[in-house]
Image (tube, rainbow, N blue to C red; front, side):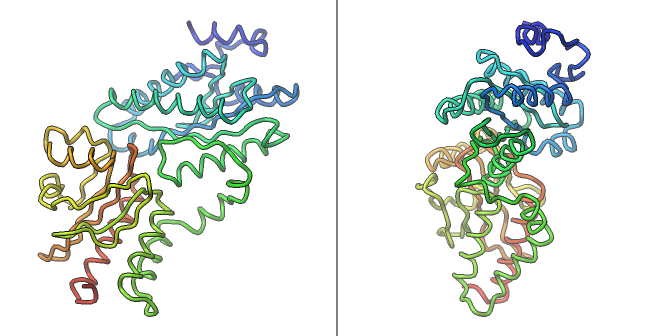
Length: 349
């Protein structure tokens, strides 16, 4: 069914000239009419769930593969999301370059909304198996009216806080706003404090703290990086064993993997980026098998090397598929090099 015909069955859009208010690329509602619809639902005191959805690291997609490929990704995401929400008579609009708004009526129970959010992620995972050469993922923040907020502005703030929490957890997920968990999130303050520049300074502050011994320094740094970047485990994969491992329960089976397996994949910048483990299945069947056994769906592996001295790899592992952002790669690259420099100076065992 054409989206215009689909919308005409929804009372708010029956008397609207919808054809002039569709996004030219994705053919879903433009920002203005999407927000008008939300405001009308609030005015009528309708119960609904608002889903604020972002395509993860979309700037990276455009910069690396070009805008035409980026457009293809956006269209594929929209068609995927529509498959989920149309059975519920949901409405989808594009409110920014890579940001979309989904509105589903009459859903207020947590479990009901959870199933919709999960269905979006399942469908996106299916899309990720088709889209090459990159992994396409989305992150969604969900808020409910009138449970979470009584007006338009506050509802968007709740959804945005949930979205930011999802981004902070590592993306490729959905978060339903819960006041006891998310109400105190101050997005602007966090963004101001956690710029890449400040993050790089914090790395050196952790590793140069004279009050702490070597192990405490690195474990504290890894704890902090896990919280900020949203990883499931981080460690140094040494020549014979794992060092300074910090992990969540979601990756309970983390084990040492021979560094020769990573060296087979290492790029010119000594960084291995595995957004989707199936990408390495043919090139390194053994490493692929190890990732499956340990429940690692994606990982970032960076050489801890200074000159000709190689001290292993900094490993950041995820239990779900993920696209690593430019800032995250830079932060972890600096962390790996700082640790390698300390090792080369004999300050780390």
